[in-house]
Length: 209
Image 1 (spheres, rainbow, N blue to C red):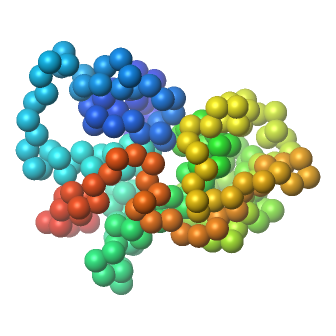
Image 2 (cartoon, helix red, strand yellow):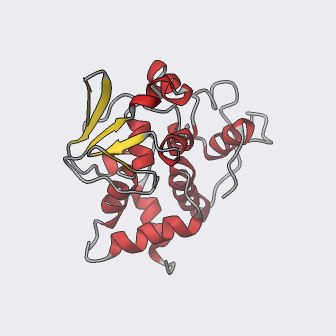
């Protein structure tokens, strides 16, 4: 998936009618809270399919996933999970290392969090991990390296965190470094934007993943 620029990221959020924190700076809907190409006086009517598609697109764009990546996560989440696979899916997405770095306020967006991870600035349980899709286990600690303390991405995220700290994470300063701990596996309630799990489930009900 091609990385969208700032204007494109704003248009994505306007089209979906939802601010997606993972895309970065807030304000996409402040001046134009309607889809691109519309003047604000009219909003086209959405079909049931379009409404379901929107919920899927929210997840895909917020977490920065390609379609096949999302489908792979869904397949893994459906294995032996009964009817609660959406909650399991969200748990997997929220505990990806790039998302954890973002939610801890180490980066202003998920995309910039990936840069920190890929450049070797993040440690999990005191070991460097440079794979953004790495899934963090409960009880694990996540921290920046000493070198990253002056990194502009980290400084920007720390100065203006995009979101409040979620309940499933804890952050404290240890020996001059910010250290986060994953306290529990998050569920659907951890999604930081308006999301209808029912519509999302319906979208994939008749689709092979």
